[in-house]
Length: 333
Image (cartoon, rainbow, N blue to C red; front, side):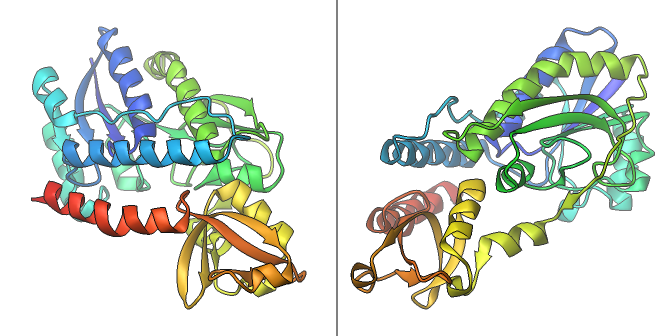
């Protein structure tokens, strides 16, 4: 009997899609049981649900303001894992200081949980060598095509580089990040009228259908196929460098548009502060000078930010400075 530990982030609606599929697939097998689910930190379900509903509301507003974008998928609800653990009798593991590679956590999981399989579904930390030794099989879901798109934010990087398709993979975990042999991989097209987040949702929905097959491959001891071709890794530093713009005057208007299309938001320093801009529009010089947050790019185009966090500025300020902060404090109590 294999004992499975799922490593995930329940606050993410994307991970909930994969976790639900994994739970159903495990329940249908008589050679595997769910021993534990590991989360990076304590995550009250009320907070996760509130964040999910607010994200749904903001995205609904965003899509209503941009009719050219087609929304193919709805924002998924999180899972109440604490309630589920009581019903299905598995452990909830929270590593101290969010460090799954700490010797105390490794000893706990080895001695008390005694797992044989690790399934990483959007877990935000890398498995170290000592932790990998605890498992006979350790498999990760990666939201990019391998080996060309290793690392973080791979959907956005694929769009930024003008790829015609993106994809996902399930692969064995090794010492190198996203370098292990591939169990299964699938590509899907990038549509010009589709947002990066909607593509991410589509990947998760497609990947969820592969999980029963992935579990069969693990049970059979399938070693996977080695990765071939030129690999590239995208780090959080790369992401911050391309989305954080301290001086927009040194970047062209076309480059700003390209980055915004791919990453969906940019942190731009304008009017003395950092603003999370999610939509821009070119203006004439005369009109541009009239705007509070307007700025000029390197190719002499006057730009006006039209959306901040997907909302017009006055709505964003009202929602995020009044409503959200107050409700968050209430929930935190």
